[in-house]
Length: 114
Image (cartoon, rainbow, N blue to C red; front, side, top):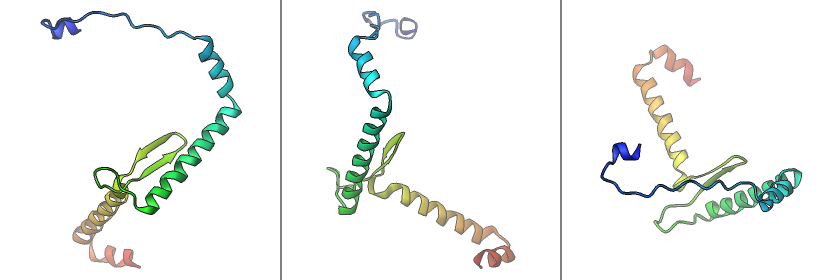
């Protein structure tokens, strides 16, 4: 497709090398593939989570001056700079409340306040 879309572009075609399954890779997968690997993974997850919670509690900031945060789970880790998620959720809840106040019948608002 590159030749069709970029006819003036000179490039060298290189075949992708197949990494194969070296003995080191097989050994590593065998050693870490079972319960030991899960325990190491759980330990590293707990360590990372604990470390980032301390940073958040101290109010540490990154190089740009934004308060640092990290949300971690077994299957993901994502940044949460300056409690961004909480700000978005608070803004959303305020918008929903404003819409309900503006567009809902008075009987609905009175019953939802209780």
